[in-house]
Amino acid sequence: MQLYNIKDHSEVVDFAQAVRQGLGRQQGLFFPSEIKEIPDVDSILDLPLVKRSEIVLRNFLGDELPNLGEVLARAFTFPAPLVKVSENSYALELFHGPTLAFKDFGGRFMAQALQAVSNGKHITILTATSGDTGAAVAHAFYGLENIDVVILYPKGKISNLQEKLFCTLGKNIRTIAVEGTFDDCQALVKKAFDDQKLKEDIGLNSANSINISRLLAQVCYYFEAVAQLPKDRRDNIVVSVPSGNFGDITAGLLAKACGLRISRFVVATNANDTVPRYLASGKWDPKETIPTLSNAMDVSRPNNWPRVEELFRVKGWDLKELAYGALDDSQTEEAMRKLHAAGYIGEPHGTIAWSLLQDNLKDGETGIFLCTAAPAKFKENVDRILGTDIPLPAALAERADMKVLSETFKPDWDTLRDYLYRNVAK
Image (cartoon, rainbow, N blue to C red):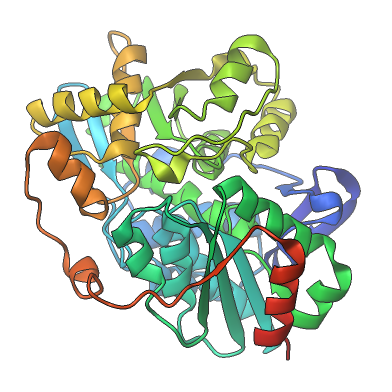
């Protein structure tokens, strides 16, 4: 698999190098040089998840990663059920993995892939999270030899249970609560990748969706969603994606580019609506990040958006084909109550996707909305809004009373750089 740097097309790497390196020169994202359609997509929909995913990813990887089937078998050990919510709407539940969020798919695949291509060299994973990435990455890499993980997150801006999931592990997992926004955390990660000496000294890598391995893993569950639809529902499919850093919708668009029959996508955001405003006006105008109920989507400068635009350019698609919308917190709460009245308990992120799907779904279309996290991860707000008392899954209950091990920093580059040299340099 050949990938080029979107910002510098002269930088071309293979999959192994892209996984190890994360970002290219000038903080450019890597993008596949060729996206082939999978022959007879309908036939692979009858296969089980791991076997089908091997075919989907082999379409990108070619002969790279010879043990791909084993990697996927170790990574995808949990289901992604499609649940019927109404006559023409289905929820794709992506929260049945160990950290109860969709990022378990990408995090676990990346951990296995990185071990396969690292040749035993020490690696430091530095990543920013607005909620769910941190837990997925921490658990995926926990205890792996020669890999240290440092996770930055905005202090006080993720739920208490989200924090407990990944800030109580210790060992090779280090967590830093940054006194700022997710965008501040993301800026620090980018700064680290600009420091060539630091990169070499600590073997720097990132597990955000900027890493191509995470993105490719997410392509697989779009095929899984369609595979679970009744065969007479597999035309005119519309998928609504709760969007923060835009890795998830990038993966869906890549699935479409591979031949999966998805007619349209809905870009669903919260009040941090940089992309919906851009699609409406053509003006890229990020504003200050606003804390919301759907905190994993509190991103004003989505890193993966350049990949979306590159894919549309390469395929000759028109950005006007994307439907879009945004809900503020009061609208989100009202949508949660409506969804609950329809018989389904949704947390804020998936609910936003459901609500905007209803706004955009036409007669004769079948809608799928992505549920990216378990409602229990947001128990306090879900119970308050819906008047429920949802039980805590074991993964959360066992950590609810554990001590948070994070250090707290201001969003200062020199402080972070010193910390990395003190704690993870070999």
